[in-house]
Length: 305
Ligand code: PMP
Image (cartoon, rainbow, N blue to C red; front, side):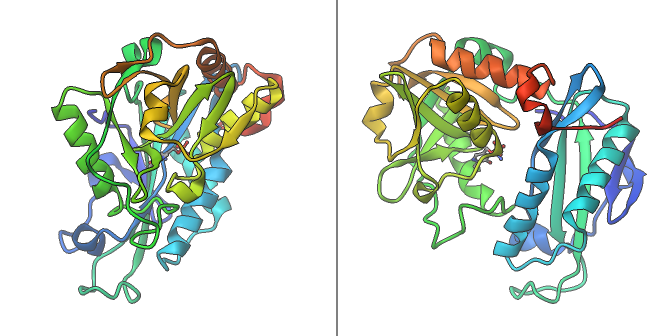
């Protein structure tokens, strides 16, 4: 999806013009992939733009960095403030925010420890990641031939830059075959997640999602969905899911900051159909919560003001 430039990008403590936010070609992360990132969204509310679960995202950024032994030179609070500055500067009331921690210029070789650590935060307007049609009528999924990496090959709990090569292989395979998105199995053959989303099935009225130990990222949207489900009296459990469980699910859906809540229409051409009642309820409640329309979830928002 194309990026629409905004005015400023926050780089290492200062706001620089969009076109000046550049790095050297010998930037370490460009060569070896050992950076970490986040994906965050801000939404319009009756008090202007608000960021959904900002602090949780920045805590996860710090945790991802710590898994890769990267010392982030800014605290969680400083990164939260920087995010609000970037959004304020953009004048947008709805945007996607991309914080990136990367190893900079000055060192080469596979030991990253002596490298300088740089941090950038950009924002821009971004529509529905898997398309408006997909959000309304569901997406067509393909189980990938690429496996989610075992956590002892790469920590699947970290949003690490290079770790996403695995996701890209699966995404390209699915898109080239005419599907919207890929589902990735782990090395034991259980469903892990999608290339940039968690996955859920609905069976007999219960929501089931793979456990983190299956290789799923600890999604912040996933946590919101767990809360919404519990508040609605719907059972939400973590359980290993087989490929065949997907085929015969009553309903299925995906979640992620970029994608939001997206129904699954089919998996490997086995039709699940139009969005079912539980998927619709979760989607509608989530869409209301992010816009500050659900009182009990207002503390999920940080107002830009
Ligand atoms: N899994 C992967 C691999 C992801 O990249 C994402 C997006 N961050 C998710 C799941 C969903 O996480 P979240 O809801 O926190 O955006």
